[in-house]
Length: 200
Image (tube, rainbow, N blue to C red; front, side, top):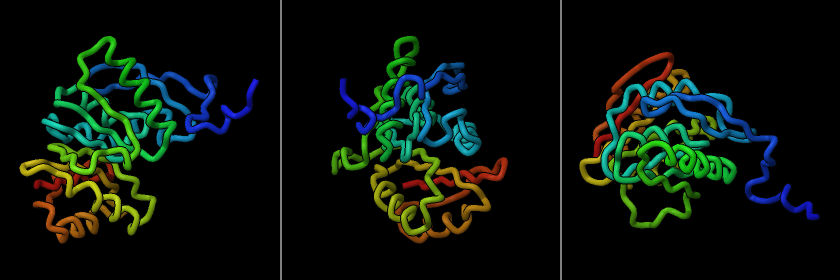
């Protein structure tokens, strides 16, 4: 008997986890979620708006702030080379790994690597970046997060971000345009969200 499993990096016990039904990559799927992560009961509205608007990903894909994996899994089902999904939440990363394994047993799925940000190789670049970024961490932290990852776009690559209009989508678009990472435009507006594209 040991009590330390309550304090491990993945503290969720079996009864805290549950299966939910979702639609991703054009398929009806069952995925595992848990408490203590973003949107554990469903694919949140912003992510649904993003996935409905983006073209199929190509090459190497990065999902910033992956949670239990709706964006990473949807991308991986659309046939890119591979998907790197990053999050600081170890429980979320564990769930994504389990969900990729579950889906990959029955469907064609590009390789998905779920990891902490500091585990991504320093020189790695990406052809496609998709993200429903954590706006509520605050403007300075959000800018730092995006300034870390958007410069990793390979030449000719595209990043798509979904942001609520009333949480600063337009000001974020202006800030992105000032950074010199590529052309910025608003490619869609739906259900209170904007989808922003940065084209390297």
